[in-house]
Image 1 (cartoon, rainbow, N blue to C red):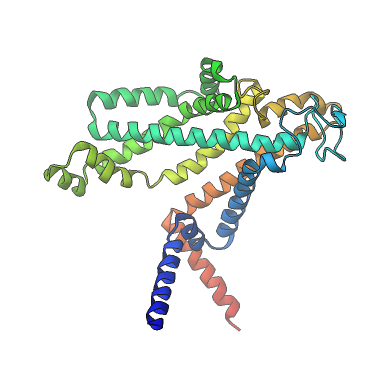
Image 2 (cartoon, rainbow, N blue to C red; image 1 turned 90 degrees about the vertical axis):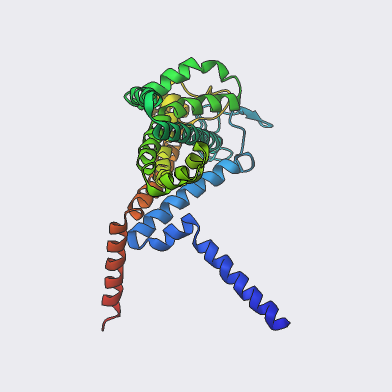
Length: 331
């Protein structure tokens, strides 16, 4: 009996380990080697750091994003880094460290909502357009091409102006900014999914499903969807960095989230422009550095996944690494 229990435990442990190794992130780490692995790990570490900052902002931030005083009195304006304010204060008297931490929460919330909404709408329209075809396909393609022709930031500004009435609260501002970015990214997912759907609907397994009488919805969401979305992780990571820059651009130009409802790095950079001539560097360096590091982290992950998705590059790097190890072992 004891031997049976031990054997079952070993089998269960082995199956759990096998499932763990098959997770997309773990699989990518196992496939990467050398510099590729270093880039992926560095990108993941930066992204994880900002996720922790965003989640724990209410706990680790010394003050609220719009707090101007404490028990000792009002904060000094443009105070240099020191006791009580490790990263100094802004021209408005806000604590820079707190603004950066709360800004991470604003940035990640906006980007996640925008990317999720873009994926949902883009995939749905791409599947319908690619599979059904006809006049509906021509109309959707024309609209997507027209939207895609606009510069990203300009289109986001126009959408932000149109929906500016819903920014009276923190989450209202985040949703408005996310919607502005969503409209920009929908055509990208639409075009990718539509192209894959057009290719897949001519495959034998789709034709077999049609022959046996499967409904259109079942074919689209059961057979086509899972095969048409394999390249989405690469697009998501690349779009996430663009979404961060778009959000910062909106805030910098004054079309982003209302500053009294949430902290936003782009707005803080705009307010720090006048400080540069006076030698006040801390009000602009830290928000700018946060944008650079977050974009760098997401870009490193995206570029690493893009390289790992190419089997030729992956095999070439693994062969090079194996040859290097063999050279080191050789006396």
